[in-house]
Length: 220
Image 1 (tube, rainbow, N blue to C red):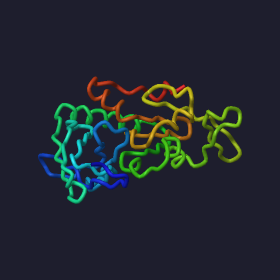
Image 2: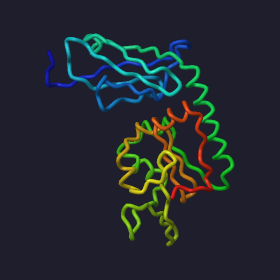
Image 3: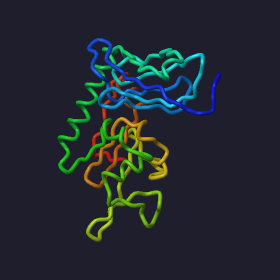
Image 4: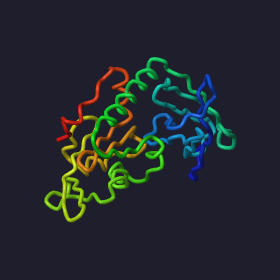
């Protein structure tokens, strides 16, 4: 029988073969809409309501098989360990994609700032709030509050926003729709382009062998 007071399932996620803690794995209550991303030690804390019948959890990490796990009601007092099996094909696809991200950044003649999984995990608010942390001098444009402008030394530059290789036509309001935990990577090239990549996009790109757009194409 459920009670009104929420509590939590605590545990960790490990690589099934190596027993190495997995950072950035998403743990969710099956059928739920919010989850928890594991920290550098693989730890998670998932808020739930007590249920005598136990819980069904979904666990996913890029490069690994997504699994469903049944945990008993005693999980509220025990420490739960979940072993996640590697998906060799997906892992190879992720390694290729990561290399493409890194290669593109290396050939950019300017400053690149990134928010990776570890930094996104610690980001509060929305994707827009996360972007503002690495471009603290960016503000909504005076001419259009949905556009993002960078104000420095008395000058103003419009910042193009691209989400999953597609221009974010709604600009800031579109960024505000994403939780940082939904994201895989945020790249900021100088103060001209913000490129945001969701975890779902990266999963599709891994499966399809998709290439990244050249930076010269822009986002707008």
